[in-house]
Length: 633
Image (cartoon, rainbow, N blue to C red; front, side, top):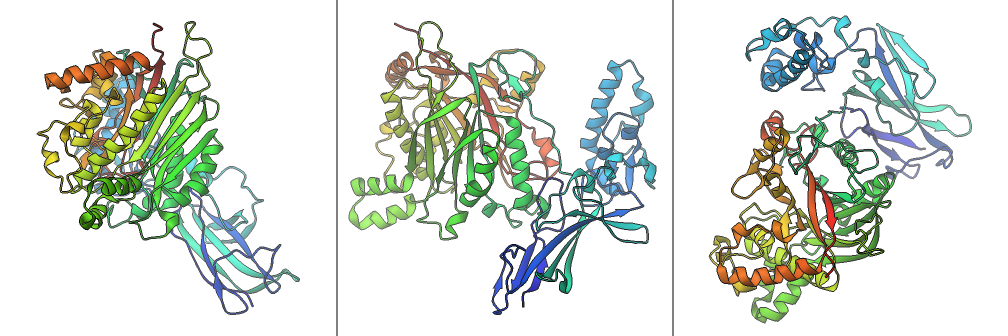
């Protein structure tokens, strides 16, 4: 007879909006075990499984800590209560929690104080007591009257409220009848119960006892402060991403690049500072999707996308939002795990803004094989391949814009765009391999550029900090022969150094924040740039490392090329000739606005990334571009 062996949840902390999928292990009549579902429409030996979810309603209202949402609140900040600060942000689970969070919590008070002053009210009455980290007025008893109405469940449940038990001030309500359940705002602060029972298909009677699980209290999904688009022209305004995905005229488009942290790498060993529930894939996938969709980019370049997650989650979910998906999985000559969990690069574009023209796949393993066949003696090939073969890939997509920016001089001209998305090898002791991979990619892009008048975007996680040899090749067009990283070249694949050059007039999008201009928002972003490289201070922030690894490069105008890097005069003349030829023969891109950078202090309140608010160890980069057609000659 069919029976339930075991039932458990991957995480016992449910989060609003994150689907709960219990693990149910069954024993079939033939004694074999399975995790397959057994539906009423397809019973086994006359039996099937029935599932129900219940929510406990308590007469005693419960508030959750704003810092540790899995903990019940015991303290409330009265300064928050007396202002328009959302009451959910006023709760804390202990005096230490409040004290530790005060440095960031007081920012809420400062913002509210500014709003109060603008309205002509007196600031001291509400905020004078919060002038130091040791001060603050707390309500230690937290009576039920202080709880937000959002913590109760007043709306009608999905299913008719079936009261199954009431005792000791607690009532259970049925909220779901399928194996999975997605908590709603009505569930916040309440415990859920999952029930699984074997049912006789003929009599509809239960067979044996019901298997149940109780969860912890449902917590709200953390909501990070929205990131704004900052114009780089000096106007002191912040852009808001509109519903249709565009923030200004139809002649511009936005591009997002984001390493989302593959689930296989998101382990408690690597990220012990992140709560286990915030590391779980069911939570992270919903949080990542919410963030990505919220940016409403026209083109989305993601790295570290697990192949099964692409097929089962990102492709179908982003399809609902109007995106077409393309994917390139890493090769698996080195990787020896489950092929379905290997990651890769995924590029999405909005079908109403672009159409797909051509796709190129770059497998650096194949390039390594060709290189060793041509350059490495047969006795050293095995050693060379073990160093070069790292499974990294790049995905290059040629798109055609469905909007026009050509003007009257070029009526009917197709507006093409080439977008490269890559993830370069991570190992810090393989600097020669990183540089070789970037050089190989750029040479491929040069061939595409030579075949068409086409602007280019080169996005991804290059695992290379500003000033490194790969970054120099991208941003400068060459690598100086005395660059210290060129000393690491055991296979002599980087020689002669004069070949480390490319003809694409690439500019880093985020260096546009360094353009001349005035405005408070622009000045704030400049403080988040490294003045020596004009790159962000960081795009990756963990407990053990902080620095910039991710970039969006684009083919810019001649005036945007960074002459500071072109020191060697002879090289300068040659480089200017090829750059002038490229710029004269191809359309160019210009940056209109950029997604604001995050400051380290705001992230350190959760130690580092990933965190409950941000579900990757990288931050997303986004740029708005305008395509500038070349002048007719």
